[in-house]
Length: 328
Image (cartoon, rainbow, N blue to C red; front, top):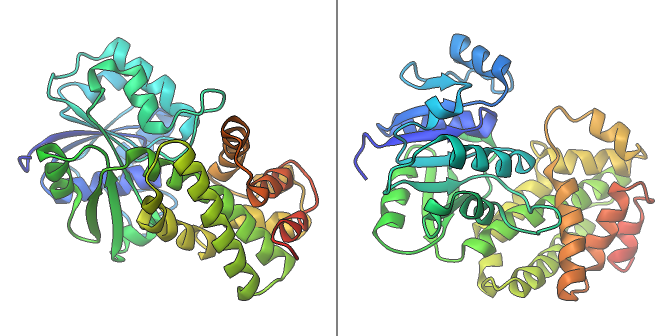
């Protein structure tokens, strides 16, 4: 893809801002759409994100709260939204924006839709039929503040192989990011979502005061249960051992940067889910991921005792149930 490709980044959270800056650094013409007008106005005026110390958006990045304006002429739509906001946003794009026939989508949101159990990439394709067959997912262990500081970070672009995939890899690759392609989009999307639930379990162990030995056992069992669900949904068995599975799980289950792990730690220390959630400043995607995992297990008749125990803990059950699920 040409260096001056027109990219619309949908979502002005930490990761959206960092990816917008990454693309601007690569020479792309970037528009950043943020659905909360007050946040959009702040980003437009200050060029800063309150939760990323020292970060500043390039002046060339156009920030707007107007969806039609933000998407006009876009060749790449980059979705970096909370999972609950993705379907409505995609639907609004379908209704308000005439996309180029060559437009493609890259999803960087993580989650599974309640009831339908659709992955985020599938939601984009469902809501915007013009993008069917042209959706990729960018995922992996990627704390936004670390990338903003220039910490070397490996990411995986999941989706169809071919010239477009190579061009997208080239566009995102560089600076702090090392991006590789993987053909199993569904697998990387499920890995990126389910690991958030397992990370809550890892945090619960931290709150209970167990050590590295116990957490290692949890990560191994969590990886095995994630693999069962990925394969049940038609994903590749080996996807779980890549950046979107094992890599993302290690980072999210062990880092103090992880809000999912932090939420679990508060549960392990005895806080109620409501109180624990009130002390986390951003979205805890692992709560919805745990619910989705439970529904996926029921639908595909998969036994996943650890994921079930984590789901119960997010609903107020004793946190020690996670230890029981591990056989302790």
